[in-house]
Image (cartoon, rainbow, N blue to C red; front, side, top):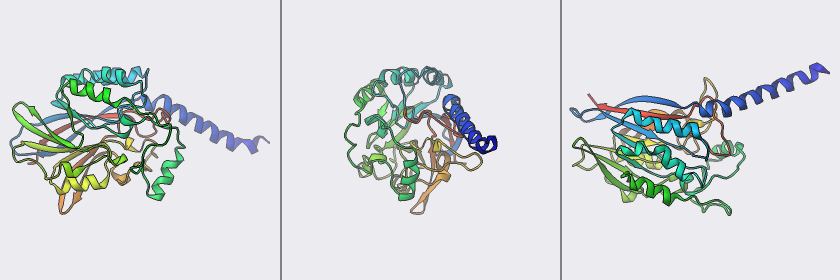
Length: 308
């Protein structure tokens, strides 16, 4: 009788231990990752860019808030926020408080679907099913009845009030030590709010450096940025796969990007041109799936240097 139950009890114990680790430790084990990207024109001084993504703030996440506030000590040249700041309609004040010290630096942002709409309780297995079926997110449909609309306008007003550029289907320019840094952004492709036609045409000749910004790295947007000859695109959304298999990697990206590029620095090629792509694994989770495994939460400090 003991042998009969030994294996299932061992599996259950291992599963419980994994859940405790992934929710209690790894999901709160915040990391700073550093990446160097050779994209600047020759002779231009290096630029330090802090990318913050997928905070998914829930009220009471004090450790995450303290960690985010501490990042101002890095003193980046500018900050890029690639969206999904919220996972709680009451989370705007705590998000703005946590990002407050970073908003003393020049910055820009795009929103993700979770900034507009609250998360819903879902079976995590549906993500795997949607991958098999080639479906992702809301597919441009209206949110289901009962979905909470987050107070994204308050978040927008807080960012705008600090001087951060709103890159929602538009362009903006940051002045850094006399240099013109052009930022071209689109709204979230995950819910089909992207309107690349409004920003197409490629980098401006007057800019010292140009880059693209988007929340979800869908191929149609990456193709457009790359074909327009942007040297670098920043994105988030994927959570790095969130639940990964050690020594194998991510199973899903929650978009049509391949799992080999689910996080970190890679390249993207379209119409004979190649851009660098950086996808942040983000520093949060949905409030309904507060776990990470083999994929710790992160913020990235990118150092942009000359191509030569």
